[in-house]
Length: 242
Image (cartoon, rainbow, N blue to C red; front, top):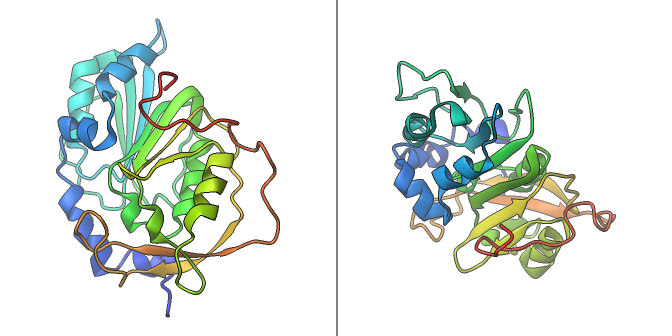
């Protein structure tokens, strides 16, 4: 099947349809990700050091603006979205918003206590590449959590990557919960997955959300990732250590 490059994908009508997620409020974030965002950031804040939260595919940033109001100087919050349509003027001093693709954007400073992506990965081309980059932006003990459908990762023949992929994710410190369709990681570090990105299929049809989404196609590389390149144990969200 013909595959789409990431530059072409950003012009796709399917990616444009992600507008369904743009207006989300903070309680929706907590529900979709299974965490208490404000509570976690308050716990991570220290005297003279605010907690740091990065939200990818943040939409209009309503949830981020709400969190900034609740947390004040206890948190520095960064949002990134492909479209410059943010709905929080005037912008609070502890809130920074950037326009860009999550496949190429990178923060000026790493060390985030929390990184989230609510239903944004469904519309990204190189999903595994983004997961690997995010892992390097976490602080020690920092949490990454996102909605993720492992069935959207396909091999060159169109078949699902399946259990070898979930095993590779676990080996690199990423926990995948097939029931909630969430992916998570605790603590920063390198991630080395044995997959090379080929392109995206924006005609894959609806995923588990009922909305059209994007499948990402990879070929499995001959070289296996270095054992222990990520965290040694991947625990799903809800484990006492998270």
